[in-house]
Image 1 (cartoon, helix red, strand yellow):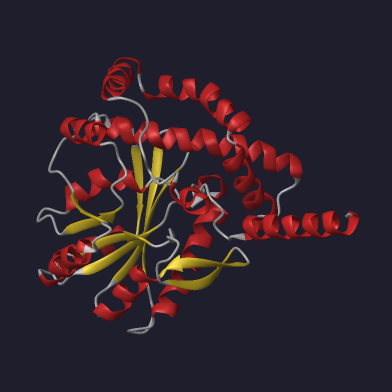
Image 2: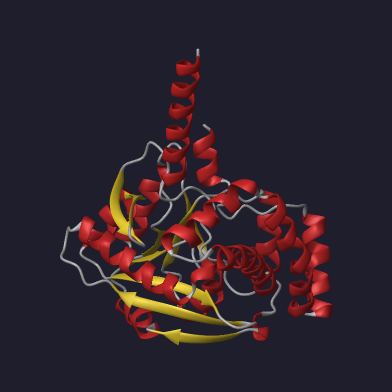
Length: 316
Protein backbone atom coordinates (compact mmCIF):
# COMPACT_ATOMS: atom_id res chain seq x y z
CA UNK A 1 0.00 0.00 0.00
CA UNK A 2 2.76 2.41 0.95
CA UNK A 3 4.62 1.68 -2.28
CA UNK A 4 1.54 2.41 -4.38
CA UNK A 5 0.99 5.68 -2.54
CA UNK A 6 4.60 6.57 -3.14
CA UNK A 7 4.06 6.03 -6.85
CA UNK A 8 1.10 8.38 -7.01
CA UNK A 9 1.71 11.08 -4.43
CA UNK A 10 3.15 13.64 -6.84
CA UNK A 11 0.89 13.17 -9.89
CA UNK A 12 -0.16 16.74 -10.43
CA UNK A 13 -2.36 17.11 -7.37
CA UNK A 14 -2.90 20.74 -6.37
CA UNK A 15 -2.64 21.65 -2.70
CA UNK A 16 -4.44 24.47 -0.94
CA UNK A 17 -7.85 26.14 -1.15
CA UNK A 18 -9.64 28.07 -3.89
CA UNK A 19 -9.30 31.21 -1.78
CA UNK A 20 -5.54 30.71 -1.63
CA UNK A 21 -5.36 30.28 -5.41
CA UNK A 22 -7.45 33.43 -5.96
CA UNK A 23 -5.07 35.46 -3.79
CA UNK A 24 -2.08 33.92 -5.55
CA UNK A 25 -3.49 34.70 -9.02
CA UNK A 26 -4.23 38.30 -7.97
CA UNK A 27 -0.66 38.76 -6.73
CA UNK A 28 0.81 37.28 -9.91
CA UNK A 29 -1.32 39.61 -12.04
CA UNK A 30 -0.23 42.69 -10.10
CA UNK A 31 3.36 41.81 -9.17
CA UNK A 32 4.34 39.47 -12.00
CA UNK A 33 5.55 35.91 -12.33
CA UNK A 34 9.12 36.73 -11.35
CA UNK A 35 7.88 37.95 -7.96
CA UNK A 36 6.31 34.53 -7.38
CA UNK A 37 9.60 32.89 -8.34
CA UNK A 38 11.23 34.81 -5.50
CA UNK A 39 9.05 33.02 -2.95
CA UNK A 40 10.30 29.67 -4.24
CA UNK A 41 13.70 30.26 -2.67
CA UNK A 42 12.13 29.48 0.71
CA UNK A 43 9.57 26.91 -0.45
CA UNK A 44 12.18 24.84 -2.31
CA UNK A 45 14.46 25.01 0.74
CA UNK A 46 11.65 23.64 2.92
CA UNK A 47 11.20 20.63 0.61
CA UNK A 48 14.96 20.25 0.40
CA UNK A 49 15.11 19.92 4.20
CA UNK A 50 11.99 17.89 5.00
CA UNK A 51 10.87 15.80 1.98
CA UNK A 52 12.85 12.71 2.96
CA UNK A 53 11.19 10.28 0.51
CA UNK A 54 11.52 12.61 -2.48
CA UNK A 55 15.08 13.53 -1.51
CA UNK A 56 16.02 9.87 -1.46
CA UNK A 57 14.67 9.12 -4.94
CA UNK A 58 16.19 12.30 -6.35
CA UNK A 59 19.59 11.44 -4.90
CA UNK A 60 19.35 8.05 -6.61
CA UNK A 61 18.41 9.72 -9.92
CA UNK A 62 21.27 12.23 -9.86
CA UNK A 63 23.92 9.94 -8.35
CA UNK A 64 23.19 6.53 -9.87
CA UNK A 65 21.45 7.34 -13.14
CA UNK A 66 23.26 10.56 -14.12
CA UNK A 67 26.56 9.88 -12.33
CA UNK A 68 26.74 13.21 -10.49
CA UNK A 69 29.16 13.83 -7.62
CA UNK A 70 27.75 14.13 -4.10
CA UNK A 71 28.15 17.91 -4.10
CA UNK A 72 26.51 18.32 -7.52
CA UNK A 73 23.72 15.97 -6.45
CA UNK A 74 22.78 18.08 -3.41
CA UNK A 75 22.83 21.30 -5.44
CA UNK A 76 20.76 19.67 -8.20
CA UNK A 77 18.27 18.33 -5.67
CA UNK A 78 17.47 21.86 -4.44
CA UNK A 79 17.37 23.23 -7.99
CA UNK A 80 14.96 20.46 -9.02
CA UNK A 81 12.47 21.56 -6.36
CA UNK A 82 12.91 25.17 -7.44
CA UNK A 83 12.28 24.41 -11.13
CA UNK A 84 9.31 22.20 -10.24
CA UNK A 85 7.82 25.11 -8.30
CA UNK A 86 8.39 27.39 -11.28
CA UNK A 87 6.45 25.04 -13.55
CA UNK A 88 3.49 25.10 -11.15
CA UNK A 89 3.55 28.92 -11.02
CA UNK A 90 3.77 29.06 -14.82
CA UNK A 91 0.75 26.77 -15.14
CA UNK A 92 -1.30 29.01 -12.84
CA UNK A 93 -0.09 32.14 -14.66
CA UNK A 94 -1.16 30.80 -18.06
CA UNK A 95 -4.54 29.79 -16.60
CA UNK A 96 -4.84 33.39 -15.34
CA UNK A 97 -4.48 34.66 -18.93
CA UNK A 98 -0.86 35.77 -18.53
CA UNK A 99 0.38 33.72 -21.46
CA UNK A 100 1.88 36.84 -23.09
CA UNK A 101 4.53 36.93 -20.34
CA UNK A 102 6.04 33.74 -21.77
CA UNK A 103 7.95 33.06 -24.98
CA UNK A 104 8.13 29.78 -26.90
CA UNK A 105 10.29 27.92 -29.37
CA UNK A 106 8.60 25.24 -31.47
CA UNK A 107 10.63 22.30 -32.71
CA UNK A 108 8.72 19.90 -34.96
CA UNK A 109 5.41 21.72 -34.61
CA UNK A 110 4.72 21.05 -38.30
CA UNK A 111 4.13 17.38 -37.39
CA UNK A 112 1.30 18.39 -35.05
CA UNK A 113 -0.19 20.75 -37.64
CA UNK A 114 -0.13 18.05 -40.33
CA UNK A 115 -1.76 15.58 -37.93
CA UNK A 116 -4.59 17.99 -37.13
CA UNK A 117 -5.05 18.93 -40.77
CA UNK A 118 -5.37 15.28 -41.88
CA UNK A 119 -8.37 14.57 -39.57
CA UNK A 120 -7.43 10.89 -39.46
CA UNK A 121 -6.58 10.50 -35.78
CA UNK A 122 -3.30 10.06 -33.99
CA UNK A 123 -1.58 9.55 -30.66
CA UNK A 124 0.59 11.99 -28.69
CA UNK A 125 2.76 10.51 -25.93
CA UNK A 126 4.48 12.62 -23.29
CA UNK A 127 6.07 12.10 -19.85
CA UNK A 128 6.32 13.64 -16.40
CA UNK A 129 9.29 15.75 -17.40
CA UNK A 130 9.15 19.44 -18.24
CA UNK A 131 5.77 21.16 -18.09
CA UNK A 132 3.37 19.61 -20.59
CA UNK A 133 0.46 21.73 -19.26
CA UNK A 134 2.09 24.74 -20.95
CA UNK A 135 1.18 23.15 -24.30
CA UNK A 136 -2.56 23.54 -23.65
CA UNK A 137 -2.89 27.18 -24.83
CA UNK A 138 -0.83 26.31 -27.89
CA UNK A 139 -3.07 23.32 -28.61
CA UNK A 140 -6.13 25.58 -28.31
CA UNK A 141 -4.63 27.87 -30.96
CA UNK A 142 -3.97 25.16 -33.55
CA UNK A 143 -6.71 22.65 -32.67
CA UNK A 144 -9.66 24.57 -34.10
CA UNK A 145 -11.88 21.47 -34.23
CA UNK A 146 -11.02 20.24 -30.71
CA UNK A 147 -9.58 16.94 -31.92
CA UNK A 148 -7.13 16.49 -29.01
CA UNK A 149 -8.32 14.47 -25.99
CA UNK A 150 -5.93 14.34 -23.02
CA UNK A 151 -6.05 11.13 -20.98
CA UNK A 152 -5.21 11.84 -17.35
CA UNK A 153 -5.71 10.79 -13.74
CA UNK A 154 -8.18 13.23 -12.18
CA UNK A 155 -6.48 13.79 -8.83
CA UNK A 156 -7.15 17.53 -8.71
CA UNK A 157 -9.34 18.88 -5.94
CA UNK A 158 -12.50 19.66 -7.90
CA UNK A 159 -13.02 23.22 -6.65
CA UNK A 160 -9.44 24.26 -7.51
CA UNK A 161 -9.61 22.57 -10.90
CA UNK A 162 -12.92 24.27 -11.72
CA UNK A 163 -11.54 27.65 -10.66
CA UNK A 164 -8.43 27.35 -12.87
CA UNK A 165 -10.57 26.30 -15.84
CA UNK A 166 -12.98 29.18 -15.14
CA UNK A 167 -10.26 31.84 -15.35
CA UNK A 168 -8.67 30.29 -18.43
CA UNK A 169 -9.26 31.89 -21.80
CA UNK A 170 -10.37 30.12 -24.97
CA UNK A 171 -12.02 26.73 -25.42
CA UNK A 172 -11.69 24.28 -22.56
CA UNK A 173 -9.49 21.30 -23.45
CA UNK A 174 -11.07 17.85 -23.71
CA UNK A 175 -10.12 15.37 -21.00
CA UNK A 176 -10.65 11.64 -20.62
CA UNK A 177 -10.24 10.69 -16.96
CA UNK A 178 -8.86 7.29 -16.00
CA UNK A 179 -11.39 5.51 -13.79
CA UNK A 180 -11.36 2.32 -11.75
CA UNK A 181 -14.36 0.99 -13.70
CA UNK A 182 -12.30 1.24 -16.94
CA UNK A 183 -14.98 3.39 -18.60
CA UNK A 184 -12.17 5.54 -19.99
CA UNK A 185 -11.35 2.70 -22.39
CA UNK A 186 -14.71 3.21 -24.11
CA UNK A 187 -14.18 6.99 -24.21
CA UNK A 188 -10.76 6.52 -25.84
CA UNK A 189 -12.23 4.14 -28.44
CA UNK A 190 -15.07 6.56 -29.16
CA UNK A 191 -12.64 9.46 -29.66
CA UNK A 192 -10.49 7.38 -31.99
CA UNK A 193 -13.53 6.21 -33.99
CA UNK A 194 -14.26 9.89 -34.65
CA UNK A 195 -10.67 10.47 -35.81
CA UNK A 196 -9.71 12.19 -32.59
CA UNK A 197 -6.17 12.58 -31.29
CA UNK A 198 -5.36 10.93 -27.97
CA UNK A 199 -2.72 12.44 -25.72
CA UNK A 200 -1.27 10.19 -22.97
CA UNK A 201 1.70 10.00 -20.64
CA UNK A 202 3.83 6.90 -21.04
CA UNK A 203 6.03 6.88 -17.96
CA UNK A 204 3.73 6.37 -14.95
CA UNK A 205 3.17 2.71 -14.13
CA UNK A 206 0.55 1.66 -11.55
CA UNK A 207 1.14 -1.45 -9.47
CA UNK A 208 -0.99 -4.38 -10.65
CA UNK A 209 -1.57 -3.08 -14.17
CA UNK A 210 -0.12 -4.60 -17.33
CA UNK A 211 3.37 -3.33 -18.03
CA UNK A 212 6.30 -3.45 -20.41
CA UNK A 213 9.96 -3.18 -19.45
CA UNK A 214 12.55 -0.95 -21.10
CA UNK A 215 15.89 0.59 -20.21
CA UNK A 216 16.01 4.25 -19.21
CA UNK A 217 19.31 5.91 -18.30
CA UNK A 218 21.05 2.54 -18.18
CA UNK A 219 18.61 0.76 -15.85
CA UNK A 220 15.48 -1.33 -16.65
CA UNK A 221 12.16 0.10 -15.48
CA UNK A 222 8.50 -0.81 -15.81
CA UNK A 223 6.21 1.30 -18.01
CA UNK A 224 2.43 1.13 -18.51
CA UNK A 225 1.63 -1.16 -21.43
CA UNK A 226 -1.62 0.61 -22.35
CA UNK A 227 -0.29 3.70 -24.19
CA UNK A 228 2.11 1.66 -26.31
CA UNK A 229 -0.32 -1.18 -27.09
CA UNK A 230 -2.99 1.32 -28.14
CA UNK A 231 -0.64 3.48 -30.19
CA UNK A 232 1.13 0.59 -31.92
CA UNK A 233 -2.09 -1.14 -33.07
CA UNK A 234 -3.98 1.81 -34.51
CA UNK A 235 -1.98 2.40 -37.64
CA UNK A 236 -2.05 6.18 -37.05
CA UNK A 237 0.88 8.58 -36.56
CA UNK A 238 2.47 8.60 -33.10
CA UNK A 239 4.28 11.73 -31.91
CA UNK A 240 6.37 12.19 -28.76
CA UNK A 241 5.69 15.65 -27.31
CA UNK A 242 7.59 17.48 -24.56
CA UNK A 243 7.42 21.06 -23.30
CA UNK A 244 10.64 21.93 -21.50
CA UNK A 245 11.31 25.02 -19.44
CA UNK A 246 14.37 27.02 -20.42
CA UNK A 247 15.68 30.30 -18.99
CA UNK A 248 13.20 32.32 -16.93
CA UNK A 249 9.90 32.66 -18.83
CA UNK A 250 10.84 30.72 -21.96
CA UNK A 251 9.63 27.26 -23.04
CA UNK A 252 10.64 24.91 -25.83
CA UNK A 253 8.08 22.53 -27.36
CA UNK A 254 9.45 19.40 -29.01
CA UNK A 255 7.43 17.12 -31.30
CA UNK A 256 9.08 13.99 -32.72
CA UNK A 257 7.40 11.42 -34.99
CA UNK A 258 7.93 7.85 -33.77
CA UNK A 259 9.44 5.64 -36.47
CA UNK A 260 8.51 2.09 -35.46
CA UNK A 261 6.84 -0.88 -37.21
CA UNK A 262 3.07 -1.38 -36.92
CA UNK A 263 1.95 -3.44 -33.87
CA UNK A 264 5.41 -3.28 -32.26
CA UNK A 265 4.56 -2.03 -28.76
CA UNK A 266 8.01 -2.87 -27.35
CA UNK A 267 9.73 -1.08 -30.22
CA UNK A 268 7.54 1.98 -29.64
CA UNK A 269 8.39 1.95 -25.92
CA UNK A 270 12.12 1.70 -26.73
CA UNK A 271 11.82 4.70 -29.06
CA UNK A 272 9.97 6.58 -26.31
CA UNK A 273 12.64 5.92 -23.67
CA UNK A 274 15.33 7.03 -26.13
CA UNK A 275 13.46 10.29 -26.67
CA UNK A 276 13.10 10.72 -22.89
CA UNK A 277 16.84 10.23 -22.44
CA UNK A 278 17.55 12.91 -25.03
CA UNK A 279 15.35 15.35 -23.12
CA UNK A 280 16.84 14.46 -19.73
CA UNK A 281 20.39 14.81 -21.01
CA UNK A 282 19.52 18.34 -22.10
CA UNK A 283 17.24 19.18 -19.13
CA UNK A 284 18.39 16.95 -16.22
CA UNK A 285 16.67 19.08 -13.56
CA UNK A 286 13.23 18.57 -15.06
CA UNK A 287 12.73 14.99 -13.88
CA UNK A 288 9.48 15.17 -11.87
CA UNK A 289 8.80 11.52 -11.02
CA UNK A 290 9.10 11.71 -7.23
CA UNK A 291 8.90 8.00 -6.51
CA UNK A 292 11.09 4.92 -6.80
CA UNK A 293 10.87 4.85 -10.60
CA UNK A 294 13.47 2.10 -11.13
CA UNK A 295 12.34 0.19 -8.01
CA UNK A 296 15.93 -0.04 -6.88
CA UNK A 297 15.47 1.61 -3.50
CA UNK A 298 12.75 -0.88 -2.49
CA UNK A 299 15.02 -3.80 -3.41
CA UNK A 300 17.84 -2.27 -1.40
CA UNK A 301 15.54 -1.87 1.61
CA UNK A 302 14.49 -5.52 1.40
CA UNK A 303 18.13 -6.63 1.30
CA UNK A 304 18.92 -4.53 4.36
CA UNK A 305 15.95 -6.00 6.25
CA UNK A 306 17.01 -9.57 5.39
CA UNK A 307 20.59 -8.80 6.40
CA UNK A 308 19.42 -7.33 9.70
CA UNK A 309 17.25 -10.38 10.41
CA UNK A 310 20.15 -12.74 9.70
CA UNK A 311 22.48 -10.78 11.97
CA UNK A 312 19.85 -10.72 14.72
CA UNK A 313 19.25 -14.47 14.40
CA UNK A 314 22.98 -15.13 14.55
CA UNK A 315 23.33 -13.12 17.77
CA UNK A 316 20.43 -15.00 19.34
